[in-house]
Structures are given as structure tokens and as C-alpha cells.
Amino acid sequence: MWKQELEDVLGEGKVIFKESDVARLSKDCYWFSPVLYEELKDKVADCAVLPETIEQLRTIVAIAVKHRIPLTPRGAGTGNYGQGVPLNGGIILDLTKLNQINGISANEVSVQAGARIGKLEKTLRKEGKELHIYPSTFLTSTVGGFLCGGSGGIGSIRWGNLWDGNVLAVTIMTVEESPKLLTFKGEKVVDYIHNYGTSGILVEAVLPIEAKTEWSQHIAFFDDFKDAVRFSEKLATEERIVKRLLSVCEWPIPEHFHSLKKVVREGKSMVMLEVDESFDDELREWAEAYGGDLGFTIPSSKYQKGMKVSDYTWNHATLWAQKHGENMTYLQARFETERIFEQMDAIRSKFGLEIQFHFEFIKIDGVITPASLPVVLYKSKERLYEIIDYCESIGVVINDPHTYLLGFGGYNLRMEEIEKKKKVNDPYNLLNQGKIPTIAGQAN
Image (tube, rainbow, N blue to C red; front, side, top):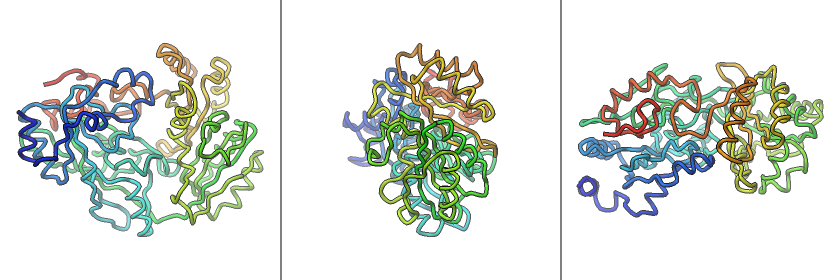
């Protein structure tokens, strides 16, 4: 009955029932985790809709509330934790048609949630501006998907994560009989960042922007991974040198970067960088001082045109390992700067190359931190959590990427506040059911 009502209101062809299409739209990149793959592989919605206007979205939400049908918001599906996978069927809300750039001013951009970040960044750079931060999947990911499911990425070395002032305002739609639009600014946006869209459907956002920098891209090669880390630590903390990306992968991770095979050097660890072009010569000297070789450069004139070093950073490194390795997955970790080598040695001594190190240097609360996305040879769920337990026992903080439960993956989420907002904005618990631990499995 509700399916027919959707079609009657939206028009023929506006509601997707084709099984293969619905199955595709019911998935994100949860398969990065073998644990999540087994838990989520059979989860699928009953249908999908692609609203083209806010009013169409409001109509869809009202029908879902009337019939108590679960709603799962979705962007481009580049999330890794099952954020966009419906656990109890219902309707997939594909928001990619809500993709307008509302306005660009000197220091901020207003944009709809379905806008592709790659297109947004391209538009801004034509205006002499650029975003503070964006994910490595920026060409395909959407603003709403990044804000609700992500945390940081390119630019986090300079500007921190999403909740470090990198979202100025959000507008959400409530899920009730007469859906409302609510706008939150300043500190109040925190409750709607990385919340998987559980407490409101994010429809618009205001993001900070800055004057465009001419970024050069580089790869430095090191015989010794510890030298690569030392170089990266020194460079990361040198505020005078303007950086957008600083990523370090130890060998053998780079052997999986097949499209870089003419660049990768056998046995060499790699540091991948985006740096203000005015520092290119100084950067070369720094690399040499630490025993490295700045052996590959993409000039600023080719920035974001064709190959990008960011295509091999963040979880793209994991993706390449999965595509060309065997039984590879990953963890999300945070090492202690003053103990990083001690912690690395302890992990290597216990697990060998079962864990391969990959660091992304970022700011957390203004402090440079060696965040880590180590590639892990997957043997079993039990072994994976043995590794996690050991890492935590030596002071390495783990944000577990092998659960779809909000908050269990870390990020210091304000879970109590998110739950309070959900009760007000989604009183029938229809939004992304099962993702909040305390009410997981509850359905109306």
C-alpha cells in the first residue's frame, strides 16, 4: 500500500523497485571489513527514492511516518562502516539529486547535502577558493555523506577533523507527521556530525573555505620506515611549511599500488605529500636530510587533474591492498607521538607483517597526531580482536571500523546528546534503525 502511495505521489519511475538497483543502493563500502561483510551482505531495502527537491523529500518522509516505514539516508555509498546499509528494509533515501551549490562568499560555501565534493572543490578553485578538508574519495562522495559518516581527510594536517570548526551550520529535516527543517550553527552542529544520519536527515550545510593554494604533490622514498616517520613528524609540526596532506606507508603496502608501478620503488617506504609549491626546494632538502629522496613530483599546474597522490592515501591504501593482496583489511588507530617507535616495535615483534604500518598525520584539538590506518592480514574475527586488545594494552587507541554501531568506532561522540536529538527529531525511530547501540534492534 505505501509503495503504491509513493508512486502515486512522486510519479512513475521516481520510485526504484528493480532488485539489482535497490540492492546496489542498499550497500556502501562495508566490505572493507570481513566482519561487516558477513553481518550486512544480505541486508537490503524494499525500495529506493531519489528526491529532486526538498518538498519531494518532505512528502516521502511524511508517507514513511504515516506507515512507520524505516528510512536510510544515503550519499554516494563511500562509507566503510555500513552507515548507509538498511538493517530492517524500508526506503533508501538517495539524496544525490539534492546537489545545488546555494552560494559562495568570501569565507564560506552553502551547499545541499547531495552535492559531490569533487565538483564543489572544482567550482571553488575556479573562484580562487578551496575547502578546508575533504575525504580521499572526494570525486564521488557527497557533502552529506562525508559530514554524517566521515571524520577527516585531505586538509586535516592543517585544519583538523570535521568537529574542529570545519562545519559552520547544518540544516536537517525531522522525521514526523509534518517534517520540519531545523538549522543549527556553531557548537550545536556537533550532534549532527558523524551520526550516520540517525537524528535527522541532513539536507544542507555551510562549510568554511579559504583562498586557493597552489599545491604541489610529491612522493619521497625511504629505505628505513622509521626515517620516513621521523621526516614526517618533523615536517608535520613545522607550521611555517603549508601542507594539505602527509601520508606515510611502509613497504610492502606500496607494492599493491599497481597504477603507480612505474613510480613505486621496490622495498622503499613512501611519504605522500601535498605542499604549497613555494616550499618545493626546501622540502627536497628536508627529505635528503632524513635519508630520503623526493623522487616523484606532480606540479601544481596539474593539481587534481589526472593522477593524484591522494588516491593512495587514507583508506585508498587499504583499497589497493584489498584489490591486489590477499585477505587484507585494516584498523583505525592513534599512536602516542612520544612512544610511536616503542609501540610500533612491540606490535611488529608480536605480529610481524600481519600488521603493516600506515600513518596519516593530522591535527586533533590543534595537536599534530600520528593517526594510523594499518593494513591487517585478516585471519579470523577472533584474531582481529586479539590484535585490537593488544594494541589497546600498549596505549594505541583503536577506533573499531568493524562495527556498524555508532560510537563503538570512537571519535568521542556525544552519544547521549545524539540520542536526545533523535527522540525529538525522529520520535518513531525510523531513521537508520539499529545503528545506535542503546536502541539497536528497536523498530516501530
